[in-house]
Structures are given as structure tokens and as C-alpha cells.
Amino acid sequence: MHLIQAGFQILRHRAIQSADEKVLFLIFISTIPGVIGGVLLEPYFENELSDPSFTAITLYITATLLIGSEWYTGAAPGNKTMQDMTLWDSVFIGIAQAVAIIPGVSRSGSTISAGLVRSLNRESAARFSFLMATPIILGAGVKQLLDVLMGEQVKLDGGVLAVGFISSVVVGYAAIAFLLNFVRRQKLYVFAAYCILFATLSLVGIGIRDGF
Image 1 (cartoon, rainbow, N blue to C red):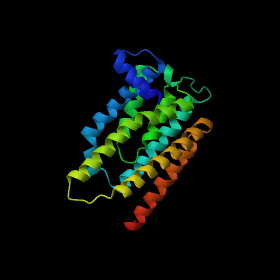
Image 2 (cartoon, rainbow, N blue to C red; image 1 turned 180 degrees about the vertical axis):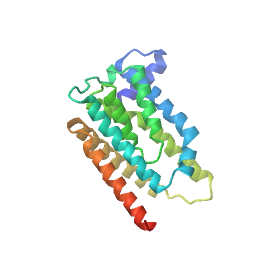
Image 3 (cartoon, one colour; image 1 turned 120 degrees about the horizontal axis):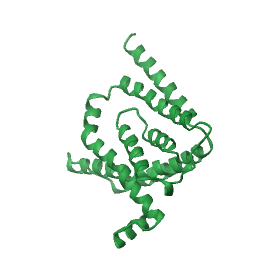
Image 4 (cartoon, one colour; image 1 turned 90 degrees about the vertical axis):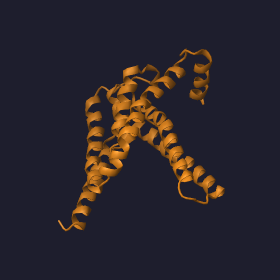
């Protein structure tokens, strides 16, 4: 809500005058690399690199990013809040989000790791990761809805759409609340271990399927 109000204030004053307005501006800047990467590269990754084995391998990249960020911060974790961020912090985290266009690379994992590397405290890194994803997720959802509406004739049940939307909001909010609480208190090694385990099991399963 504060950021929405900040957006109206920016439009009204044509200037950035408060901490919330600064955060909103940085979120906008951080989305630019992801938007450019999505428009230029996402069709390529979807068509050429959607093989399950490739996705499994890139999960190791996610694990490496998570472990690397924890090792980098080490015994001196960052203490910067979102209000302390610089323009280059937002660009750096935005590039990390663009990298997550690659199938198997976790968007939240890469952006939270980038935030930690840029000396954000754990909660701020997780919050900024969520906030910067919101416009891209909404944009992707609108695009997919338009693709459905402009494609073959499909009968859409308003009740079904409403239930689906409400369910996604509730589940998404619960997942975000869990993630923020977890990252605030725990290291990212648990997520890294999950990525490694899932990637390894996937490659083993693919190998068994293909007779190797």
C-alpha cells in the first residue's frame, strides 16, 4: 500500500522525495533487465532449451548461486535495508532476475542471492526479490490471458476464473510469508540442497528412461 501511494506521489510531484518513492523507483529499474531479457530471449529458451535434462543441470546453477552468496557474506552479513539501496544494487539484482529466464534457474533464488551479495540484510533481500517480481508476474499473466482470449474460441467460466484467481492470491501470499520468515532466520543451504537433490534424481530418472 505504501508503495502504491508512493507511485501516485511521484506522478504528482514529478520527483522522488521519500524513502518509499526511492524504493519504488529502484524496483522499476530492477525490472528493466528482466523485461528486456524476457522479450529477446525467453522464446529461444522455451523452444531450444526446454529439455528436462538441461533444466535439471541448470538447477545446479541455482544451488551454486545460493551457496556462493552464503559463502560470500560469511561471518559479515549485510545490514542494508531497501531504503539504503543504490541504483547499482537494483541493476545488479535486476540482471540476476534476467538470468533466471534460463529454465531451471530459480528467480527468487538468484535475486535473493544477488541482494545478499550487495550487502542487503536477509529480510530486505527477500522482500525486494518479491516486490520486483510483482510487475513481471502480473505482466506475464496478462499476456497469457490475452493469448487465450485471442486464440481459439474458449468458453471461460467467470466463477472458475474467480476461484482460480483468489486461490492463487492466497497460496502466493502464504508462500511469500513463509519465504520471508525462513530467509530471515535461516541460511539458504536448505534450498541449495533441495536443488541438488532434485537435479540429481531428475538426471538419474532421465538416464533410466533413456536406457543409460
